[in-house]
Length: 231
Length: 260
View 1 (cartoon, rainbow over the protein chains, first blue to last red):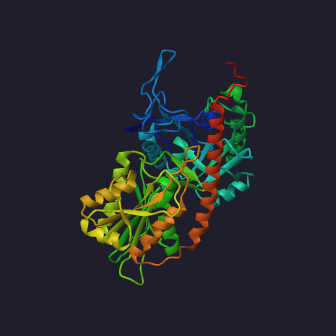
View 2 (view 1 turned 60 degrees about the vertical axis):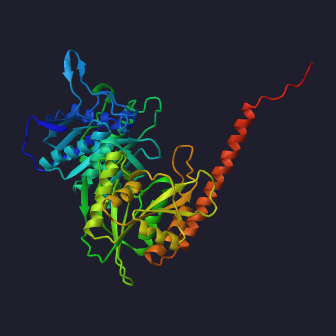
View 3 (view 1 turned 180 degrees about the vertical axis):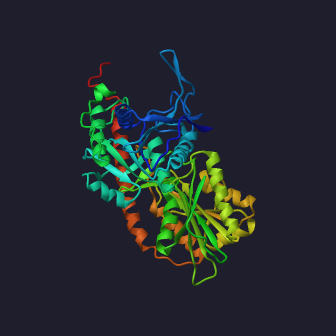
């Protein structure tokens, strides 16, 4: 079962969803956490799922497999309890729905992505930007999109396509299933060096490069990025 | 499960052909080739939560979900139209494979399919010069058809995954079905990927087209066969080299001097 708890239901126009989740060198996670910290948006909803393990059965966490469902549970931090979740934050200006994702196990990956898209539909999301990492190629940031028109649009920001192949996990499925529901979007991939010993070891430098490209697209100022201190 | 319906075709006494990716991609290559040559039209897509949890980014940068697809082809010459079922993936779990197989057979019933042809690979685990085609049937009277087209009757063995389940569940639904299995060595690369085998698909298509009584140009697949053979040859040479290297490194060299 996957369910959403709403804390607030703001009057929205047409927010752009920004999606980031744990993944290759944690680039998407770092980027979304930075945006949340920087702009202090309102937490409006949380998504919970019985398919969210606290300890994933696979390494990296996004490569889910039916035989390795992981370990369910909760975390305790400074005597406070935390349950695995996806968080939705609303920012009024620019109007964004920031989504901090989490990887479900194999049984829940599609279910969770669909529930996220239900939230997007509720808040009239028509466009999304997904933030992630990629481990090959030459470009600093490359992109994928739900249609060719958006790929051409990205060229204006000096972002070309390069990533070809499988895009795993929460962000990939929200992106792909979003297309099926008519939500147009782009995915920005920051190029990083894979770390086989710890695939999700944070790459702050690349997350920063990725955020600079995002700031150009959204026309927002995040020039004073100091990720080490912000995160 | 999600469905995207593009069209509701009106079909006359259709046959159905099914082929999902499997060993050597034999069934998938065959289905794709039929679609390409006949210019069959896509009419429905299926998306399943039992598919692996990733999306595909194509060369042009456009994102695609993993999916299974139905195509149709209107036969202007003969009486039987055609439905082709394929996709870029198989469901990973047995539950998902059953669900997909049932959906396929629901379409077979909906369109009043006259005969179902499922495709699969017959793994030999050794090099194959000219792949032989084996067959199995849901109804005894269909054995005559195997004989007519010189298909070898498959005595024992299993057909795993969705390709097998479509065939098996067809019997339960009393849909006449023939499964054609083409011989393939079942090579796997060192990184675990199955080597595609267009040669096996070519043999399978030769038989299938006769059974369907349709004519398609099989010359373009020969080019792919050549390429695959070159690749397999390289693979075999490398394997031979490594085997030899391992043999040398594990065989102790004889002592230089022997004292008795």
